Image (spheres, rainbow, N blue to C red):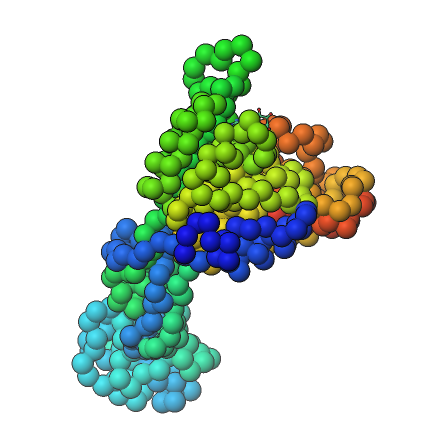
Length: 419
Ligand code: AMP
Ligand code: MG
């Protein structure tokens, strides 16, 4: 497949303004992983994307064992007074008891010890009374109390981890528990980030007349890093067609994806658009969302190009709702679907129907102590202060025209969006 092949051009948009759900469905259906695979030790696997299923070759726990420190016995042979003869010896974790516990007897066991033959139940040491070769255990213990069954966690042959997940610490514990020490994972997705514009300058330096600091690039780099991609910061490129084209061409050869902000508006003077078109393909998508209407997707050879809007809030919204899942899919992950939680609105407001809106939001308690969600009072998509104030976004459906106070709205916590 070539970048200009119109049939396989996965970044062709639909007609006109697209609903977010349509845009997502389109990308989801067309994008496949582009990264290779490699084998890594468990110690280095956190945050990596699993490429092959992990199937257990073993039962976990491998044998019935004691959940507590105490005394093991068989309930069937327990006398009415609960008094059992104390056996000589003990069973500890890693040191099973060789013999057989006779009927009417109990054996000292420690947590994790294999259940001694002849026993099915463990009385906790706190609940027993020891006296000269005898042990009094509670008479009402159910058979199997304080016993962990073989296979209660995992059965041999169970698929315990599926490919496409980003490995969390608990996933490593699961792999380790079945004896797997190395995992097949995806090679990291490499992403280059850059900003373009003579008006942009580096934070930390002096801003000249008419200049603004480049705030999108540090945010985007951190967002991409946090998602587990390997990020190259290409810095700020000047408004110079030849330089932009050369730098993008070079970067495309060495990365799976290029991401920029303010590269989405298709104007004659826009060097990003001209450069990507000269090197490959570029499509402007018009999304029926606010903020973040224009977004551009393209390809330079095998490299995916993403042009986000310029305004920082639009960058964030487009990134979390579209770009992150799309890059994660390229990286070999499942397409993540964030969960929205219904929370009563702590405000009332009219909304223009026809587009999906994302309001910067924060959970709060009202005077009665009930959970409610507050909306940042102003809407500008350049207001970075709204992002630093918020702990999530309210997602408002296209057809909504008004929100009444107390009406449930869809709250997307930043944690659901990978932030
Ligand atoms: P544009 O998409 O180029 O029309 O830019 C839209 C808005 O985003 C303008 O107000 C730009 O100044 C602003 N903007 C563009 N790039 C950046 C950036 N890297 N950091 C902060 N603001 C930016
Ligand atoms: Mg610009």
